[in-house]
Amino acid sequence: MAHADRIKETATTTGTGAITLAGAVTGYKTFASRLTVGDRVAYCIEGQTPGEWEIGIGTLSGATTLARTYVSASSNADALVNFSAGTKNVFVTATASQLRDGLVDPTDAGFDIILVAGQSNICGRDDLDALVDVADPRVMQFGGWSSGGASRYRKIFSGNDPLYHREG
Image (tube, rainbow, N blue to C red; front, side, top):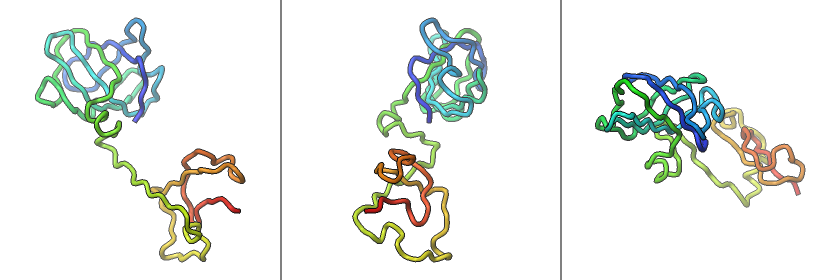
C-alpha cells in the first residue's frame, strides 16, 4: 500500500461510486503528484455537509479517480457513504486499524517472514530435487551482505534454489 504526506484534494462527486478528484487544496499536493495509478492508499473523505465522512482503502484508478474498495469506518454504519451534492475534501490518511496493526492492508494477503540463519544446509549445498525444489514467486530473499552481491545489498529479490548466499 502506498503512503504519502500532505495529499488533499477537493471533489464534488455524489453517490457511492469512485471519487473524481478535482485538484489540490491550497498548500497540499494532488494524489497523482505523489502516487502512481494502481496504488492502493488509505483515504478519508469528509463532506462539507455535516455528518458525511468515510475512511477506507481505495485504488488510484486514474490520475483523477479514486476507487473506493474497502470501508473501515463511516457515517453510514461503516459502509459506503452515499455522498450528497457539494464539495468534499479527500485526503491520504492512516486508518486506526493500520496504526494498530502496523499499516497493514486488510485486503492484502501479506507475508510470512522466516529467518533462516546459521546452518550450511540452508544455503542449497545439496543437489536439487526436481519434485520438491520448484520455483515459487512467493519466496523472496533479502540481500544482507555487500561482498560479492553489491547489486542485491539491502534489497528484496526473488528467492531461487539454491538461495543466493555469501561465500567465505
